[in-house]
Length: 87
Image (tube, rainbow, N blue to C red; front, side, top):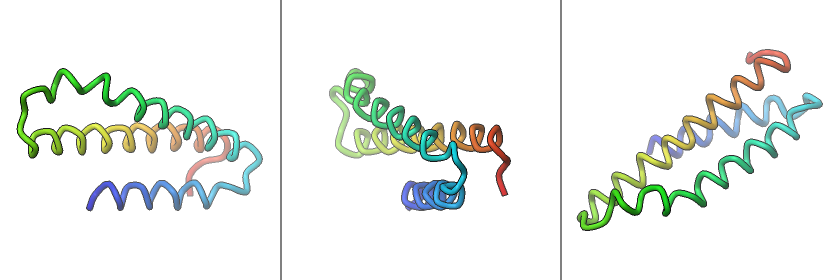
C-alpha cells in the first residue's frame, strides 16, 4: 500500500536526522501540523462525500490522507535542507 510505504520512508528520514539538535523540535511541530490536518479532515471532506457510495468515500479519504502525508514529507524535507541537507 502506498500510504504505508510513504509513512515508513518518512519515519526513516526522521530517524536518520534525529541526532541533529533542531530535529526533535521540527518533528514535534510537524506532528502537530499533521494532527491538526487530520482533525480537520471530517469538516473539510464532509460536503464532498455526502450521498456517495462506500467506494467513493474510501477513495476520498485515501486521497486526503495521502495528500497530508505528501505535504508533511515536502515540509519536513524543506526544513531538513535548512538545517543541514538531506543525505
